[in-house]
Length: 575
Image 1 (cartoon, rainbow, N blue to C red):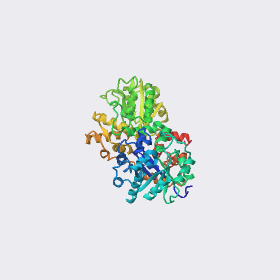
Image 2: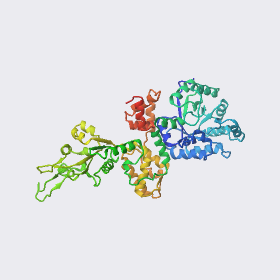
Image 3: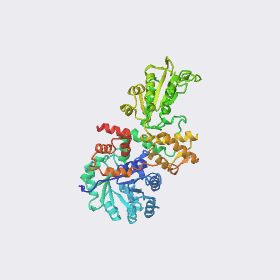
Image 4: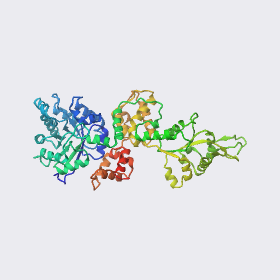
């Protein structure tokens, strides 16, 4: 049995910066950068990591250098392949250390192979013995070392080579890699005990693979065996897909889009660019309500695209042959705001003052867009309410009103519900302009759309289809909080392309953006929780409590999409 005084060790085998950042925020003790993780993202199984598809070590170095090493707080270990006879274990270890890796592990390992292939590898000097040389070289150079093993003999060999941590692999993870397993959790625990027989208690021991596909499974095995930790590989990549395939697939789609843009309609409104669930839902809602004449209220933070959304709703109406009448409510002064809205009769105050048509009357047979309607003072709110209720506009100084048929589309960057509760905004007017309400999400809550939006702005600003963003550049864009939302992103792309006409945007070009430096603080806050969550429900509940039930922030902290968080809250009745 595991010594209960020893803390549970959690390692994550990753193949991308997105996954690495998520598990790093969640508090992983260490990360392993493996070529298998990248292959899983591309639809292959972990078994493909043994194939000579490309130089494995160079691929691991490239992924880590561009996406992981300079981003994560947790120690990062390189999964190194020594199958090539030309590879010198000492040289490859020194290169890993120079790049900034904290340590190395032997992956893919010959330990998981058997039969004639394994025999031939050992005969050629590229088998498990060479992996021991790799671990020994790293240990002698003061680097962290983790050894994958499958037998007691291999565990003892790695112990002699200086391995600090030994991970027992009980087969490829069943359930989603094309590999099946009949091994039970109890059998996996027994196998781990056999493999680790005679290994000193001072050596940290972990387990990976086989029937372990959830945190609960890992905890069960550690309680049944002497291992005190678990390495998650395909369980990190695969389970979110099983639980919310559409949402997590979009995260992986971001990776596939890196370095290339989508060739879409260059005239597509930027407010609608993006394939996230939030934007798909928003577009469908607009499609449904645009043909009607009912008032629409659009809410959202500054820069989210409310005005573009209002204009698009108008464009899909049968009055769209003319442009909408747009009123900036923040600019309506107390003195002449009523005239600007309602108009006035000729010569009301001075004989030379001509008849003036107000914005409402001008919008007859059209749409009128009241931008930031929450900025209206009480008097002007009353005028809009009267028009909304009667359909009549009475010019200032006139004795009679005129019937006006105009659709009201309003926007607000303030929470009108709060303004209504505090009597700043009239409740009766709120209900009149709010037959349909559309909430435009901030960009930080639909990060899956950032790569697509960046490509859209690059095309629209340059009229070129060949602008490319490097993986590292998109990583910086993904991590920025975007307080100015889509408008800020557009300005950033415009600035970058003004200074760089090469058509290739690198991380250096966007280095002026501030990143979300929350990983270290969040890990510290999480570790201070006296009650360690024992299952997924408690894990999510603790995260919600820690972030004051702010769902967007909690979802980012957990490394899942807001939609997935909502589904899990509903499943566990955490609403």
